[in-house]
Length: 65
Image 1: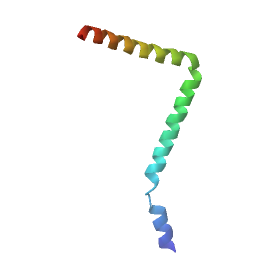
Image 2 (image 1 turned 90 degrees about the vertical axis):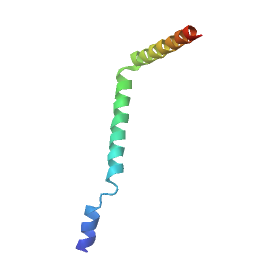
Image 3 (image 1 turned 135 degrees about the horizontal axis):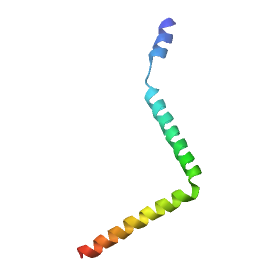
Image 4 (image 1 turned 135 degrees about the vertical axis):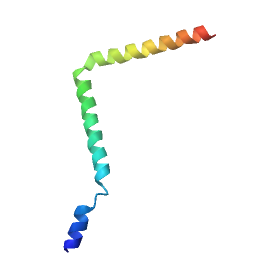
């Protein structure tokens, strides 16, 4: 009976997936907090970034043709 308890205690086969799950939960919580605090400003910053990338790609396309 002692051997069964020791082997169960020393078995770490599920430890990695548990750690990845904890890290994923922490990152999801962090993202939720950031979106909560930066409600409007984050959306406009992302929109401006995509607009800038789009205009630069269009400019590159017009120069190359």
